[in-house]
Image (cartoon, rainbow, N blue to C red):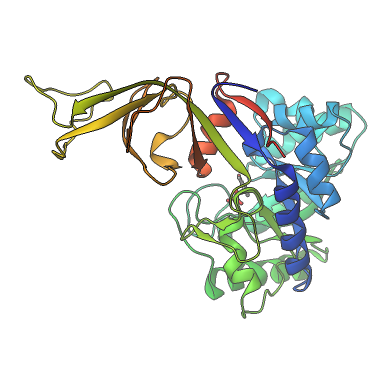
Length: 353
Ligand SMILES: *Cc1c(COP(=O)(O)O)cnc(C)c1O
């Protein structure tokens, strides 16, 4: 593997998954391991299943199909409400999907009937972060709708926090979720098997001292892959935080002043950068840009400082001249990783041993 590449250490990811599965099990919480950042890689899926994940979760049906094609037969949860245009594929490939829309539920039921299947539904309820889910006062009518459709099975109730507005899981909102589950069970005389409290942002709450109540599942991506909880981006003790490395290549390195000259307007991204004058420096250019990663979400090694990025150039300050062809290794955060995984210009491969 040469050039611009993402090195992936599946052993470290497997270790992280195993530790999190064990810690959560002590609180009777199962782990749905989330594969979307790695585009549903079957190799990742095998590692996560071996580590004890109870199911795999992905937001894209394409990724779930990729895992099925790769021979993965674990239960799979589609983490985003199905697109109406993809309903048949959802029923075919995923065993479960998250839902909030009655129209989508009806379409899922028809598709399941047509293919002689039962589709499992996790109803999402809004707890304040304002992304997916029904408002709490609409939960009962939505449950009634699911229960009226014989090819659907209500397997769980879930919630998602933190992703849009950074709203934290708390004793209050998690308590509200448990209370709603109790109330649905009493009202409808049905048992809710899975209560999925949230994503990696729920770990502090779930593994802390508060009573998990009815919550018996979490859906974890970032914590498993990057060993961090996303609310404060703190590393989780005992986990690897360096499972991924973005390796970049030097294409130019020149002594240059730090201050631009000439009349200035906006740059190509509509920004009007403030430049600090540091005198003359070694300005080194790497063959990677905003098309390939989130350059603001890279951690540079000692002696390298990121100055700016355009579509195809990352401009860094180095202590000395770097030779064209030299490599510089960065640690990507969640956003940088997400974009690197989807850039066709970034080669993906195993970390060298
Ligand atoms: C992506 C996603 C997750 C996983 O989130 P992490 O922060 O990576 O743990 C969980 N639930 C839903 C609905 C998601 O879309």
